[in-house]
Length: 187
Image (cartoon, rainbow, N blue to C red; front, side):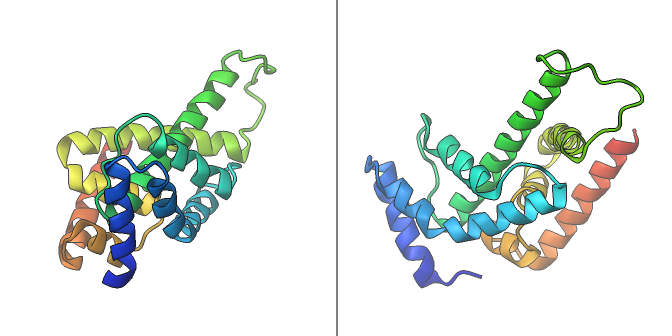
């Protein structure tokens, strides 16, 4: 868990970034970089994806830094937005790999060829993304919890702190989210 003294500089950097300081976002991201790499490494290991940890963290930063107005107000919010950006990077990559399978210059995939681990990971990411979109429409906080656990790699205690909820509320929402996702997968 992060202490308030560790969070204050990130909050100040994010305030400067929102005020227009172009280098403040980079500094804030640097302050949480090791934590983001740990989360990305855990996610990629769980998915058995070929994406590299550093590349995922950097792509997420580019997604956050590019174009849109930064909305992060503190360290936890930046970590949550980064987890969402990592999810978007992995989903975009999976869609691109899936599009390649439909004729992007690749050999045709036959019924006898087995899916490699990266193809299976791409299918898993796309399926989870669709399920999360459905869950988000029903319960936004539960979807955010799944996103932070699955794509961010954060523990229950860390997520409860990020969302400002009790451990008990988090566990209840996590059970509800899992039940929803299992029901949707079996439907």
